[in-house]
Amino acid sequence: MAKLSSSSVFKAAAWAAGLAATGNLALYFISFFAAIWDPSASANGQSIGLVNVVMASILPMFVGALILLGLNAISGNPLKIFNIIVVVFTLLSMGGPFQGIQGAPMGMKLCLALMHIIAAAAAWYAFNRKTSAKA
Image (cartoon, rainbow, N blue to C red; front, top):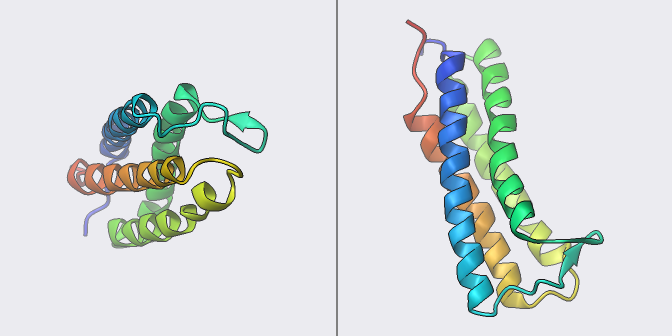
């Protein structure tokens, strides 16, 4: 497989960030207005609000872009390895909503877990569909 262009990787990261933020914001507002989301719940003393949801949707996509570029430099098939990393990190991240937020209602924990899956799906889609080889 040809090496990926760094510009297409960062464009894919922007796509992934937009998709993840849009999906997670939609879920946030649905769960908030359906009274599933508990605004008083906190993780490590920090409330989980709108800004946290947006930042947690956007920033990991650009970290993922840097990881993909690193894999691109050392691997002949960086997307295959990247996809494995996405799956592993998604599975590992499931512990956060269920263990890291004491006292939050189960519905909110399920919404947070679904947000992790939305972000992973956005990363998977964007990095696999929007990256291209160097010319």
